[in-house]
Length: 262
Image (cartoon, rainbow, N blue to C red; front, side, top):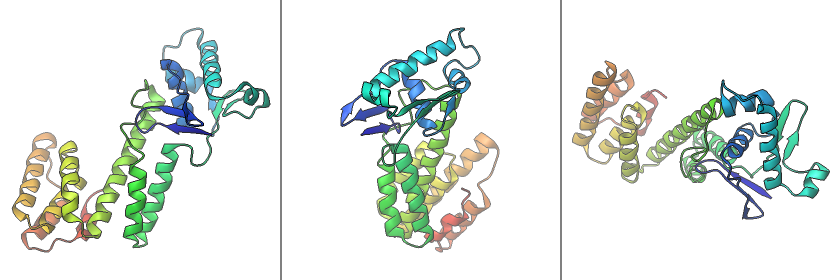
């Protein structure tokens, strides 16, 4: 069985043995095929990913060489002869077959989808467990050690956005479960890493206030307001302004997260 990991370093194993290709362009082709798993990827798309607007004259033959190298690394000669390996050659491109449970990105997306459904159904504890399992798949930026052309960059950005949404959901679940003090460390780190992200700043304000640290909560709001005005010429969103008012009047609840943009 093959397993594929791209939420961090690119890693491929077959039967528990590493088979990750080492050549940079071959790795880039593999990453693109993984990003579009179980879908035929046309040759022009692969060429654009590898060389953008300046492909060499030998681009088609060079891609074929990279695919040959992938096939040698990922499947046996018997698989290739029988057509049962993961790599499929079509009339206009290539397809990588990836089964259920083999790919960390697919598992992350499945688990976060189930977590969202559990949260919407009011099953916060189930949602928390699913999110912990989903986020455990991440060890760094997607395709961290792979050169990225236009297609991979767009895919990586989409995954980073999905990662942020999963973090937001985990914070929302934790606050609904009353884990305000437990979340403070993570929220401070997220607020520091994303200083203009109102959702994380708002979550930190709520957690601080609910932990009896009102003055710190108001300081977070003030810092964000100053930064927004300095960097963007904007004030905090109406939702965040309402959360500040709730801090002042001791009416903050986890439901105030619904006031934040996201």
